[in-house]
Each structure stands twice: as structure tokens, then as C-alpha cells.
Length: 222
Length: 248
Image (cartoon, rainbow over the protein chains, first blue to last red):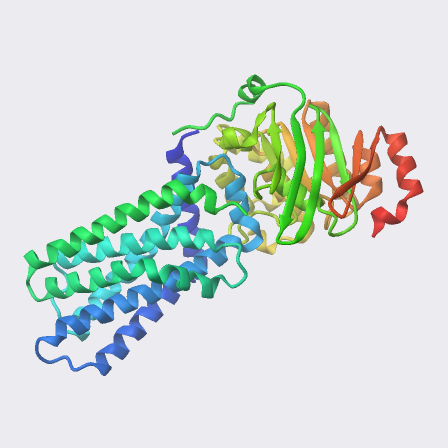
């Protein structure tokens, strides 16, 4: 029995469930599009503020959508004790962590691709460029890594919908700030200035990943 | 990263007893759910865990399978501390809890194939077919779990627990929702499992099931073992003396 086979089984199961239920991605998409639309009407999109407004709108949409996604993903996993079934199987905890992270990354990436296209149309911004995509990728990795860990931590808590964002917020702040700053700079064409922020995002993603892989076993025990 | 699940590997890990729990205690805040439970279970034994609601039966099973961390005390599976080789121990356990531990939106076959991959079952298709026949699920393999009755869901949960040929079955009220025919099938299945050298730990509210299957029983009340009975006659006697305790 290989860890790879277990990993692919978990990811395949998550994707199949989402394909059947279409709850997670659809909910996240609606939240994202609504956020972008509201910001589009609320802000003055003329002049130099366009990039900052677009960048802020994008990351608010991503953060809200992923929070919604985690809540739903945890609920789907917990129904009828399927999560306990996974924990009882002979799968190493880091494998579960990475599989759950990858599943969530797939869902969030689908939402982000649509969000970027909508952002390009509504805000008339050149979002489909390597620098912006790299920032979105790194920021998403950091957020999803943190979210996967905290979602597991709060899985057995009755008020997890409230607790999850409350716990997540302080740690996610540097990622969100870094992502907004780097996206704005990339959209304005200051690629060189965005590099330190990208490094920060990469560093946080690596740190959260290591933290998650090391502690996932402990946080899943009652 | 690989995890061994071969039954022979577990045999190498140790022999009798299969399970030893010492001074097992679980507290949630100020409330003590289990209080210094000592328990030894040997290979091939079927142990019934009896007691009224809230006695700590389910918590005991959850502690033994590693879903809950004990406040104090120790657990040894196959002669070694459970924490030392988690996946190797988990590979030897088949667990049926009150919740069915299946994905309702997946079909019976999809659920079983998923668990077969998690447990590294090589002959998954053959094993699923055989268990389907044994548990009367052959016609329902393509049905979504959500669409099944509670009794059928319980049968699928049993199939999932047996899929990887575990050495130990831990069953939390396995007769819940089963009709008479399914209950007979369950008894037959557990008897054959024990006859093949498997070990069973089972909580139940049904005294007749305990008498029928268990060689030994313990009775829990308020987190403590109040009495234990060895042999069916002794168990029968205890249950006759204190029938109200079991049927609460």
C-alpha cells in the first residue's frame, strides 16, 4: 500500500463528491462574483486607484470564498462519520493533510480562474499575466494550507463556522496584506517591487505547509 | 512512505493478549467519562461491553481505536503501545461505530473501493464481490448509500470494516437498525470471524446478542467496570440478576 495510492484515493473521492453535490464550488463562485460586482459598483475605477481597488476586491472575494468553502468541506466530510472513517484507516496523517489541501486547492483554483476573468472584464485590468498568476497562486497556497489545518482543528467544535475565521484571521493577515500589495504592484507593472512580497508569500506558504504536515496528527485527535 | 497491513506483520508485533488497557481514564472538563478501566482481551475472544446509556461504552471504543486521546492510562495493541505504530495498528482494526463512516453521496461499491485503496486491499474487486454476497448487498452495490435503509447502511458499514481482513473487530451497537434476518447474519458473521482467530469487542444494549456471541462481558456504569462475567452461563446469570441494567 503506497502513500501515493492513498493520496489519490482521497483526492478522487473529494472531487467525485463535489462533482455529485456541486455544493462547494458553486457556493464559492456565487460569493466571489457577488463580491466583485459590489466592489465594481462601489469604487471609482478611474485613474491609478483601479489596480488597488481590483486587487482588494479580488482578495476579499478569495478570502470569503475560501472561508465558505472550508466550512462546507468540513460539513461534507463530517456527515455520517466519513472523516472518522478516514482517520481510522492506516493513512499517515501528513498524507491526509496534503490530500485535503490539494482537493481544496483544486476547488479554489477553479473559482479563482473565473474570478480573474470577471475581474479583467469588470475592472479592465491585465490580470492574466504570469506575475499576477504567481501572486494569486502563492497567496492561495498560504491561505489554503492554513485553512486545511484549522478546519481539521475545529472539526469537532460545535461553533466551528464562527471559530474557524476567528482563529484563521490573525495568521492570515500577513498573507492577505502581502497578496494585495503584490497584486497591486504587478497590475501596475512594478514587477521588481512585487518580488519581496512574493518572497513573503512563498515563505508563509512554506511555513504553514510544514506546520500543517507536522501537527495535523495532533490536531485531529479529540 | 508505506504502511504494512499484512496480517503476518501484526503477528510479528506480538501475540496474546491482543489488547491491554491500563487505568484508562477520560475526562471532559470536570466530568469523568471513564475512570481507571483495566482491560485485557485475548486473540479469538469476543468481549461484550454492556451498560446503560452514558456509561462510557462508546467513549471506551473511541479511546481504543485512537479517535480520542486518554486523559490518563495506557493502551497496548498486540503488545506494543498503540501510539508507537498508529497506521500499522489501524490496519489491523475493523471498526463499526454508531455513525456508518460512509459517504452518503457515493454508491456502495464506490465507498468500498475507496476504503480498499486506503487499506491497500489488493484483490479489492473480488473482496467487494465476496462481502456483497456474504452480507446480501450484491444487488445494492450500485446504489447510493443515502438511498439505503438504516439496516442496509449498517450492512455496508460491516462490509467496510471487514474489507481489509482485520484481526480485531470493534463494533459499537452493531445490531442497530437490523431486522431479524440481518441480525442472524451478523451473529453468523461474528461467530465465523472469531472461529477464524479474530477478536471482537462489541458494545450492545441487547443481552441476547451478548449471550449468543460473547465469551466474556464487562458491565460499565458511570465510567467504571461494575462487573465482568466469563462464559455464557455466568453472563446469563448476571443478566438474569440485573436485567434492568442492560435494558435501560
